[in-house]
Every structure is written in C-alpha cells, then in structure tokens.
Length: 112
Length: 114
Image (tube, rainbow over all chains, first blue to last red):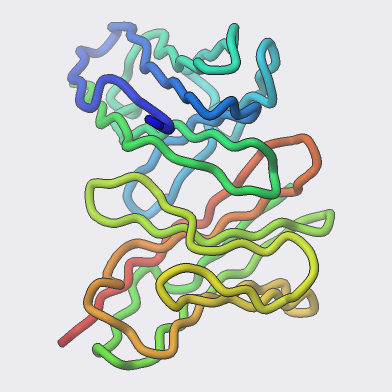
C-alpha cells in the first residue's frame, strides 16, 4: 500500500519555466489537496478536489493550475515559475472530511 | 471563512514536563478539528481529531486535546514530554460536509530539553 506518492522529491527550475508536480494515491480517496509550506506560514491550501472532474481554488491559487481526470491522480502545474514559488509542496488525500488527510512526503522546489 | 491561530511559534519544555500547544479557530459552522505532527524532512502525520461527540479526544503518542466551543479553542496537551516529541505541530480546521477544505495554522515548533 503506497499511500500518497509525490514526484519528483527535489526540483530546481529557472524563472519562467513550467513544470508539473505529480501526485498519485492508491486508496480510492475522493478528496485530494495541494499545499505549500513556507517557514512561519504553516501550510497554505493551493487547490483542492472533491472528486474526479471537480476542483476548486484554495487560499493561494495564483500561478498554479490543477486538473482531476481520475480519482487516483491530481497533478499540480506551475505555469511560469517565479522565485516566490520556491517552497515545499505537499499533496494529501482523504476518503472524507471526518477522517483527516494522508500526506505525501513532499516536493522541494527551488526557482532561481 | 475558516481560520486557525496557533499561539507561540516556538515552545520549549524540559523532558518530563507538561506540553501545552495552543490553538484557536474561527468557523461559521460546527468545525472538525485536527492536530498533525511533522518530523524533520517528513510529511504530516495525523495525531488526533475532533468531529462530534466527546470533547476530550485522545491521540497517538500520549497526546490529547479538548474542544471548547465557548473559547473556540482546541489546545493540545501531553502530561510528560519525551525527547522524541520534538517536532513541528499543526492545528487545522475543516467545515466538514463535502468541501474537503482543510485550513492549517502557522505551526508550533516543540523543543524538548534533556
């Protein structure tokens, strides 16, 4: 049982480049979310999804795009990377609001 | 809108002392409340949660938290700190239902001194 798998674990991008952070879960969870973690700011919600084909914006959605074509996958796209997007990104999933989320191990992204 | 405030970005206790990490929330509907722990260079792990029912909830590793609606608080406690408890702790609130939206506080780093 792999849980929530994020790839890559580390990435360095140049300003203006685009890339996709991958997230996959094998627990048949309906709900999935993306967070970024920055020192002193906790985890901030970027986008979330309550099922395949349904996504919504979180607290800090600008500069990011998501889609949810299957229950298992929830990729996060950086459209044009900026230094302000240097952060650790976490993907999480849950079967429902009562249960609490299961987190991936994170992707550390540096934009230079 | 939901929000969470964790009082104190750093808390330091001696081994064997009481641990108290403070969390206050704001929610327009009855909230679901969570505490997570993050060890260095790892993801987050669920410690405990309050959804409905008993307001004192027990979690893993000897931690517990009490939901106090009148004070809009959900403080995390442990009677006796262990060196292995050193980590960052996050309080989070969800409005439940079908939103799937979970909002986190800023986090509190717990240091345990020998």
